[in-house]
Length: 569
Image (cartoon, rainbow, N blue to C red; front, side, top):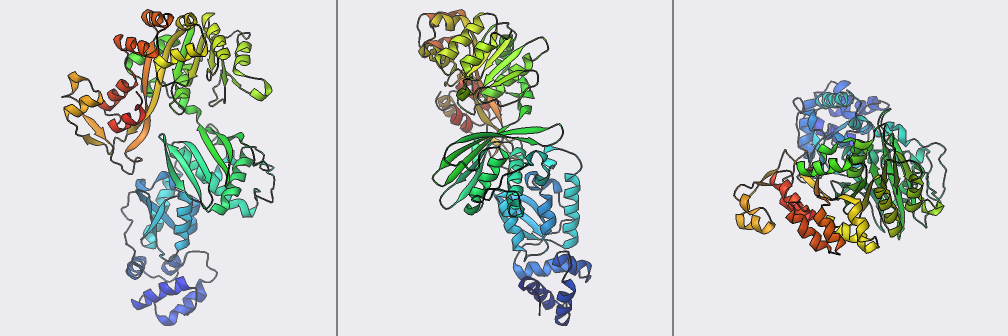
């Protein structure tokens, strides 16, 4: 019996069940040579062998499960891994995910190259499920038809992303960063990774080289998760490709670099990536932050403020002057809170200027300035220029030093509304941080209007969350209100195909403090953050822990998640 080993093993199994004769095997191989179609499809279409019988025999021969796809629900096919090129190339359809295992339907159990390439492109382990050729084709056609029904972010093929086309790419013999045939797989793989990150709602991408491995991780809902491990030999070529796309110097691998990629998903939709490179022992680590301007258009009702907190924020935005400060660690959503406020204020009657490092989200109608310390464009110098530009509203990306704080406070005291951020753990600590910087207490007391401290907690998946039973003693230990212990119903994560570990999306947890006359007096008298926090409690403001527990009581997140994000409070 001639032909390659895989085809021979298929025909041998079929001949044992009298679906083909041994004497016709050589004729089949000769006739199949030059046919531009998969071998199993050839047997079904050209030799009129029953596809279901083929699948049943091969299932028995190779030990793979066999299913019929006639009534398969194609909505179960994960959207983030519907790659038309791979599906058509290998005649293989990813069906569904179970944890980190992707089950792939195929009619040919010998095509192991398909499983390897799908595993490489998706980052999931693959398991083969056998099906008949006609059923597989019908299911593939339905999936791809559904995929092309409308133009949406989930409907764009990685090879068709117009924003990723880089003209005049430089060749680099050492790293092979060109765009020739040898690098086409790298280009396609990078495009695929970027698109998957957007579809999965990732905020950051990490490309990390090590001595014997190279991994790619996404930060989804605030948690890093590994999604692929390409061969370590490709790490330098991937780094070079990303640097070319970011317009960075591919020959410079000794110092960090910063760049940007603009990804055009359609004529009306684009997403920016902020790119940072860092030399490590085994190559350059590259981290990309996804900057989606649509996040600033969500509206304040989508951010998770309680009714009273939203009222305080909106009243502060409606004032002609004063200072609104947002505080929290990196990744706590401060930028989105500020941009949401700016979007509300962004009208034809107002002149709005921002100084940012870096500019994360582009907003039409707002004058955004990118800080460039090397060129002498610092936060203080930008603020001084703003005050000569007839501003109504000024936003300072971050108050880092006394000079910036003094100019911002001066602007707030002279008829301008100022929005800014600091890195502190609570609202009370924000006030003492300004005092410790050297800002006079009377300036802090007279200029700051409100302070918003915030965190982001993962939102429970509504499809699979389940009740969590805790005793009233346990609830009391966690800090839940004593008068509501008997009424509290909590939920915990489970995990399903629609979420990641029982969570889907995030919700903000806020401490919103309006600077009252009594709080101002404590500042003027030199009170510390504890004194200010105690007064905030007396005035009925929820701290971060209390706000988080309220979110858990509302069923929006779990107690476990609240403990994770408010552990220090």
